[in-house]
Length: 302
Ligand code: NAD
Image (cartoon, rainbow, N blue to C red; front, side, top):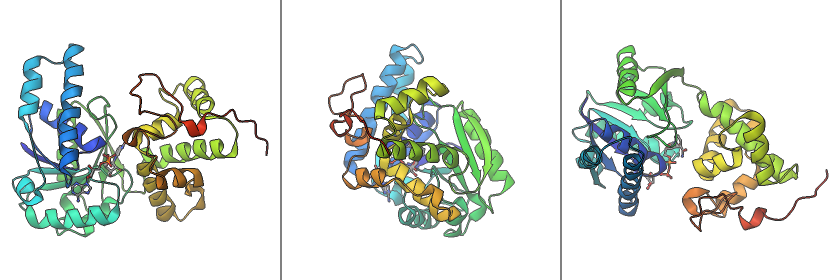
C-alpha cells in the first residue's frame, strides 16, 4: 500500500494524515471545508515543529512529511487511486453511509475502506457498499502522532486477509494494533464514555466541581487526564454522538447522555475545538483555566 486517502481533516484526520505521511505513505487529505484543510496543514506543521524541537525527527523528515501530503475538496479526484481510504469525517451515520456509498463507486475494487469511527457499526457501514469484505474499522486515538493504540474493528464480513493487512499496516505506522469485534463503542468507548458521562452527571448533581472531579480521577486512579478535560479534548459533540450510538445500540438507558452534556453541545460549547467546554481554551494559556460557567463554588446537597 502506498496511496492513502484520509477523509475529514479535523481533530483526527490531520493526525492520521501526519502519521501516514511521516511513515512514507502518500496522503490525499480531503475535507468538504477548505478552511478545515488549511487549519489541518497549520496543525500538522506545528506538531512536526514540536517533534523537531524535541529531537524526535530531523528538519529533512519534517519537509518530507509535508511533501507527502496533498489537500483537496474533490472526493472523486482525491480517492480515485487510493489503496486504502481512512475515513475520519464527523461522527454521524448519515455522513458516513453517504461517504462509503460514494467511495465504493469512486475507488478501484481492490481499495480497502477503513473508518476511524469511535462507535458506529462497521457492519452497518460495510452494508452500504458492495465490498463488505474490504471494510474495516481503524480506530486511532487522539492525538494520533503520539498515541500508540489502533483498535482494529472486524466487521461481520471483514475478510481475514484485510484484517491482517490492516494489523500489519498499523505496525508499519509504529502503532500497536488490537483486534476487536464489532459492538457499539467497540472496547475503547464502550468503557470510556460511560465514565465520562458519569463525571458529567456527577458535576450536574453537584457531587463536586470540575477541577475536583478531574483531580480525583487523575491522582486517585492514575489517569493522565481527568474525564472532563478528556471530554473537552475529544470534543463534547463527539462524546454525545458516541453515547447516543451506545444507547441505541444496546437499548440500555444506562448510556443516556447527561442533560448537561446535551445542553453544552446545543450551546456550541464543544471543548478545545470551540474554545470552551468545561475549561476555557480561548486565552491560549498552557495552564487549565475553568470555564466561567463552572467557576462558582459548589455547595449542593441532594
Ligand atoms: P471533527 O469534528 O474535528 O472533524 C470532522 C471533519 O470532517 C470536519 O473538518 C468536517 O468538515 C469534515 N467532514 C464532515 N463531513 C464530511 C464529508 N462528507 N467529507 C469530507 N469531510 C467531511 O471530528 P473528529 O474529532 O476529527 O472525529 C472524526 C472521526 O474520528 C469521528 O468518526 C470520531 O468519532 C472519530 N474519533 C474521534 C476521536 C477524538 O478524540 N476526537 C478519537 C477517535 C476517533
